[in-house]
Image 1 (cartoon, chains in turn blue, red):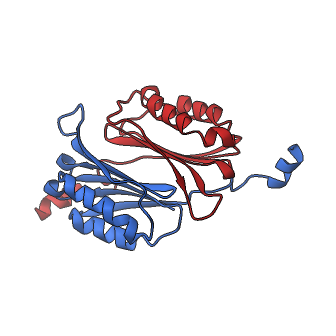
Image 2 (cartoon, rainbow over the protein chains, first blue to last red):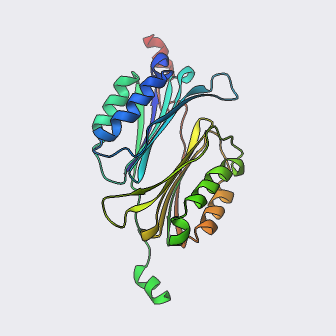
Image 3 (tube, each protein chain N blue to C red):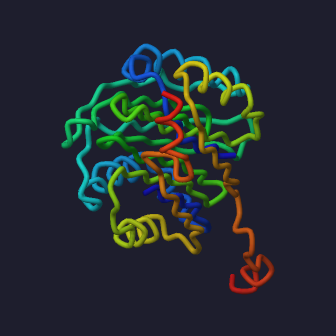
Length: 128
Length: 128
C-alpha cells in the first residue's frame, strides 16, 4: 500500500525543523508495524526559486520507504508512505496533521502489485 | 509529477544487481533535467519470506526523489520517480524497461500539488 499525502496550511516553523522530520521518520515505521532498515537521512535544501527551500527526509523500511519534502514558505508538505504490507494509515495521518498543524490534507492510496493485474498468466506459460 | 512504476517479468540477475540500481539512480536525474542532491543509497535486504529479498535504492533530487525496490525472485521492480518539475518520462521508462528486460510495466502518473486544488482560498483569508 502506498499512501501519498499533500498537506497544506502547515506551521512554517515546524516544516523548517529538520528534527521534526527526523523524529517522524524514526517513529512512523513502528506506527505502521514495519521495520526500519536504515537510519533516516534528512537534509535541508535550497531550490532555484527563493521560496523553494525546505527539508527532505527519507528512511528505508523492508521493501518500502517513507519520503518527506517540506516547503515552509508554502506551508506545504509532500509525504510518501510506501509499505509492502497493508497498514492502518489513520495513526500516521493524524500524527502528520498534528505535528505540522496542517489545515488540509489531500490523501491518495495506491495499491502496488506483485504481479500484473490483467496479465494473461496462462498465455505467458504457453509462450515459454 | 510523480511517476509510479510496477515492472514485471524482469531479469532476476539484473534485478539482484546493486550496481544496476546505483547506476540508474546516478543517471536518471540527468535524464529528467534534475539535480541530484545526495549520493545514491543502495542496499540489499532480506524480508521475512524467503522470496522477499532484493535491492532497495534511493536518491534525493531537489525537492523530490527516486526510490527503487527490486524483487529478483518475483522478477519485479517498484520504482517511484518524483519530480517537483514536469519531465518527459519516456526516456526513463524506456531505460528502465531495457535495463531490467521488463516484459510489462504498469505506469501511473500523479500530479502533486502546491496548493489545495479545491480550497476556498478567498474564504481562508476571511478567517484570518
